[in-house]
Image 1: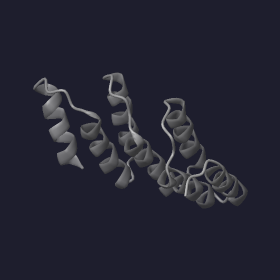
Image 2 (image 1 turned 90 degrees about the horizontal axis):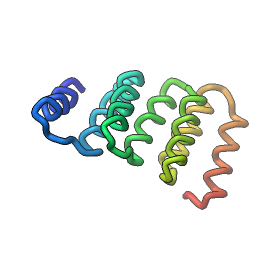
Image 3 (image 1 turned 180 degrees about the horizontal axis):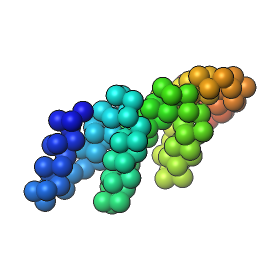
Image 4 (image 1 turned 90 degrees about the vertical axis):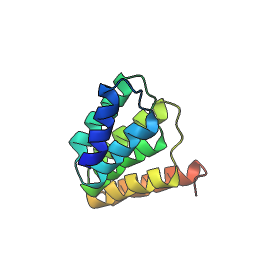
Length: 122
């Protein structure tokens, strides 16, 4: 994780414009390590630097919420993603469903499953 962040910081310090893949890699690394706060920090920094987030960026953040059973956080990110015109994938929906299930809200998980089916995502 630290190496990803170091390289991105070096790029920024040297005036090299990182792209969405550069940021998404750091976001992904922090999210997979369970550090949601740092993943979100880099996400916001990416947006502040004018880089539009992609599906991978959002899926990483939603996954980080699902690991902790943070259904509200997962739902917040899927809504933000949709507000930017990005269409959730099966990976996105299953992470939200997982977050709901881990939080003990099976009804909410079922509602998200139905939403996924209604949207034609398989």
